[in-house]
Image 1: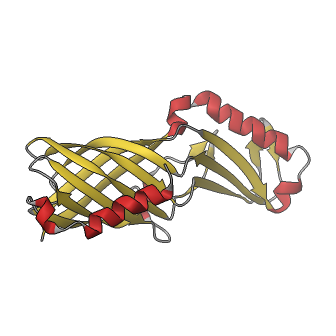
Image 2: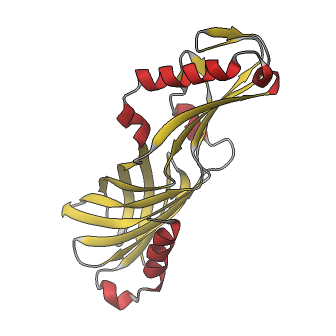
Image 3: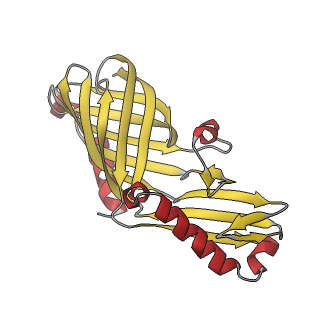
Length: 221
């Protein structure tokens, strides 16, 4: 699927007449691991809701400090994708409990960066040059997702919660350096060893997943 698939679903949601819903339409505002954003829900029946949402990560987003960001003993700053789009369905199975699924598009990869001011060990080699080391989790930009949630976004007032995972069929960790460190002898091989060591320590499936955790306030129109 391509980005226009997500755009098409979003457009269908926006132009769908309210008469189709019969069960209501609602909007919500959320905060979570993908940033701040908004959601909208269109009830197709008493149990099925068409969902669409967008999240944007501001500069110095406070939640990035809560994300574990240590690779081989080196502390990294986390840089989240700037924009995330989602479109899918909610299936209400028991009261406020629901299953959710759909497609998600991220504008960027997840990136971590470490500023090197003294020395750093990479792939078993110590480098004293200054610069920046970057680790990038390269995944498919458009991925399916599934999860569970609480609250019906298409009706009522109150809180709602989404917890899920997106899956990328292709994923790899790429490491690079800038500054004086980028021209250090043996840096490319050391970065490759560092990335290989991370992949050896982490289950392959872990690099193919991307979390969705958000809480928000919703109200029916």
